[in-house]
Image (cartoon, rainbow, N blue to C red; front, side, top):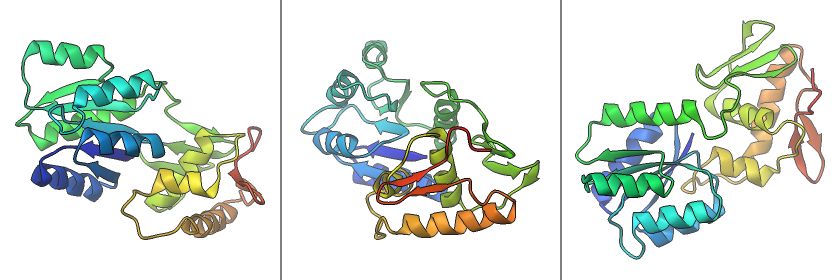
Length: 225
């Protein structure tokens, strides 16, 4: 899961980011609305956690610009503004959920999971390519009903390729999906991930599942089996 946390309080911003990273998410942070929009223009995010009272550009302005641009990132508003009118305005502008500060971290975790399960485009709960299945909710990969041990990054790589079946994903695009902006790694790490994942797939009898388009990127063909 790739998340952008937009919050002007440094303490809350970093505590949220640290907890989400500990749960396996890739997290970027922004301290104001202008920085948030710059991130959103450059990177794809699964979820945006958005404060409303922000410097430079407030949260409603961010939300308005986001939806006007057709960006379908799921948005969870996290704000001290607790009036019904505030909630209605945010939801009408395209927010998916609204939580009032102070909040229980366990409730935030639960609401994030609901957003991910629900999705805006209702993706198939289980992705299939021949004998291989990938369950995004259970975080499980199986080949012919036998579990395949993969790392979180290998899982994310395989999920991205399966969701884009038939389309080539560049090394740079895969890097953006799997790593946050704080990472010191280069996009060449994707080559290593592809290599280790291919080795595991080969041992399970799927050596040719991930194809390389030299000079372009990687693809799982639509008719792969």
